[in-house]
Length: 402
Image (cartoon, rainbow, N blue to C red; front, side):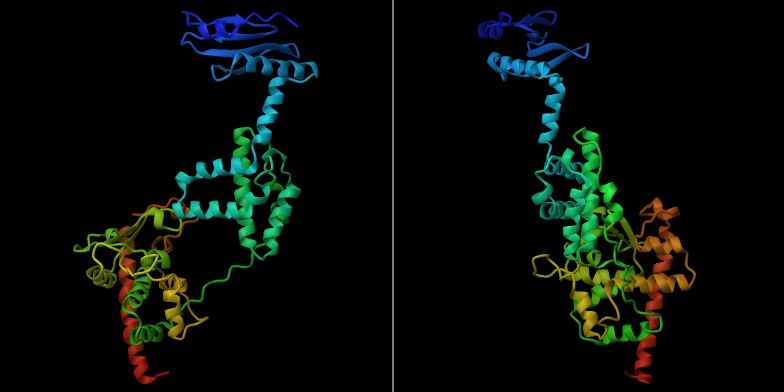
């Protein structure tokens, strides 16, 4: 073994110079002193006829004794025919478990996700993935192991959840590939082995012929005032349940002008895109009524944990009206879409009223203000149509009561 020339005192007293310099120890181990005064232990060696330099740590975090131990370990790897830096990289990769990489992937997605979606995705991984696959080195997980795990989720009947979890895993593996801690995405190999989703069950919707009697029942039944107003606002704006439940005074603009707007932030929207709703005269009347009752806060404020009525309140109201298994709140959006299409209104205007985005045309490049004037015209026509159907329903009830 070569004589060691470095001492603790020499390392401690080594001072910066105009140029970096080395202080040798033995067999390729040396201390590199930079112009800024940093002291770095290095090991120069040859592997496959190539000169390589291995970092062993910085003084004083790494002592001379520790640097020598690392140096000896690296020389043992060389003696066994291995590249010590490759061996150390393998150790680092082995330390990268699926959960460690998965949590980094979650944080990388966070800026582009709504807070609610981030928390939901994190909870799904913490419940269904991390307790079992989490401690496995990500580089060692193969398709059969991942498939076995996903099938356990399928076996409890959670087919859609299983597919979502598989997609999350794919994102984590691809993130790991980019970071260099794994080489492939096994989720791509199991895609065709997953159970198919159940056919989409369309929400029950009120038909055009049923609408007059439905509106009369809605007006005649003694619902809580906020529930009645909420259902009416769904009808008039084609809004979703969550958009209506958490509608806030701060979202309404220009309510004393000819162009009132309901501006729903991206964080509140299903597709995480801002949505503008032009308010018809009738919708504005409902909004003003609610603002008068709850100025500066939620339109449908209640003394509950969420601050508003529950997500099923409007649906249960439909049940009390006699529409169990015949209509849903979401189905009221379909009623608007169907009737508007049958009246040959422009499809893009209708889809933007519904805040729908797909891969075609205008809907692929969603702009919250797109066709705003035309959508205002459409929603005003729709509100006037609702008024006409309400009057027809009242007359029908007199002529042919149920």
